[in-house]
Image (cartoon, rainbow, N blue to C red; front, side):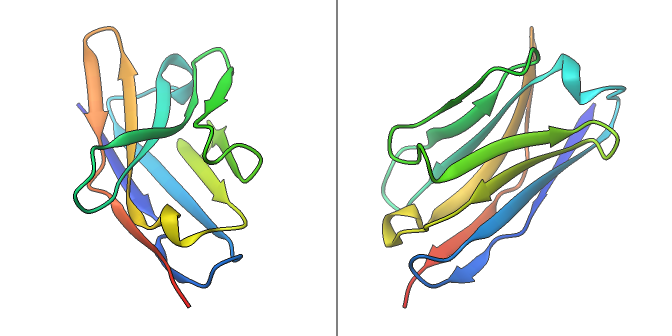
Amino acid sequence: QVQLVESGGGLVQPGGSLRLSCAASGSIFSIYVMDWGWYRQAPGKQRELVAAIASGGTTNYADSVKGRFTISRDNAKKTVYLQMNSLKPEDTAVYYCNAAKATMNYWGQGTQVTVSS
């Protein structure tokens, strides 16, 4: 089993920045073997993929966050990050970390991000 714990959410003004962290623990030797994604879910909306990094390092982003968000990983810390800059009110959501490989699929509990003045 793999456990994922997100942190770093909070209240930020429009134009501000936050860095989310997803710390992995349990039966995971290297985060490089997994495909990682950050998802978000706003009230009344479906969960959507925001950013992803494949095991090989390829990244992709939702059009709505391109140029503003960056996903990265640190295997030594077994942590995946989401740097969020130039935040907008429409970025307000609960952000979830996901790790997947073959039949394995793990989710964190989520962290709230609120962008408001």
